Length: 181
Length: 123
Image 1 (spheres, rainbow over the protein chains, first blue to last red):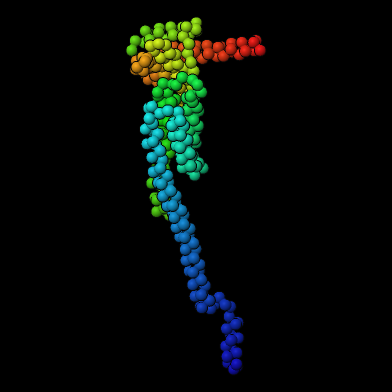
Image 2 (cartoon, chains in turn orange, blue):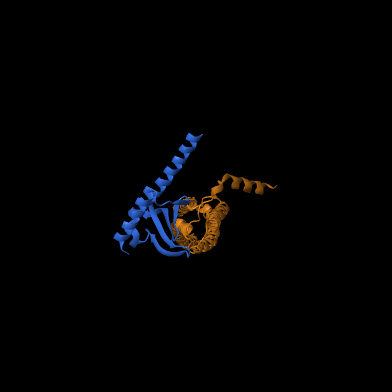
């Protein structure tokens, strides 16, 4: 290295680094890069949340369709239904309903409706047991099984309708929330 | 329907049940049947849990008892009379039907106890 070059290097080293323009250029580029990175993280988080909520909405809509089918079934109970058929009917409805509503039990807005449906299912089962034929006893008149469970089924149907209403509200609200994000 | 006349008939059925003139049979835990040569009577108790909305939010649960009383003509099996106390028109006969139901269950319970006593004494 020649003397003028060493001298020049010494002069450069004697000046504090923040007095150099190129330091501030690289710092500025670094800050802008960091800002873009933070913005990208926020955008990705928001997009992930929106995707999760959208997935949940699709699930809620699928469940809602199945709940509507059950509701229609509950409202079309045969007046002349006999005990074995009623037992099978109630068991079928009960297991399907419980499976469908279980994922929503911890939702603040849907939880109470879920609890009401569960309680009504238990009540219906108790009412049906009250119409269980006694062995060797004379047969009960046609319609006695229907009479025993009809009110409970109507109650279940009502609570399913409540849950459906809440789900529809939720399905409407989520995309709006997602758009805001 | 003439409620006063109906109440009188139901009260008569209750009295005849208590004296043992009418022998009812249990068909299921909540339904009882009486059969004669030309008629069949049945009474069923229905217990329902109602969910009543409370002012200010929430739901209150109420348990109500209703009764279905039916009279069939035999041997044709034609339904001649049906009273369901869930109907507004029949609400007035809820208590007479409740009394009849209790008379039937009380009589049958007593018959069961008497039979048990007879078995124990005979052993």
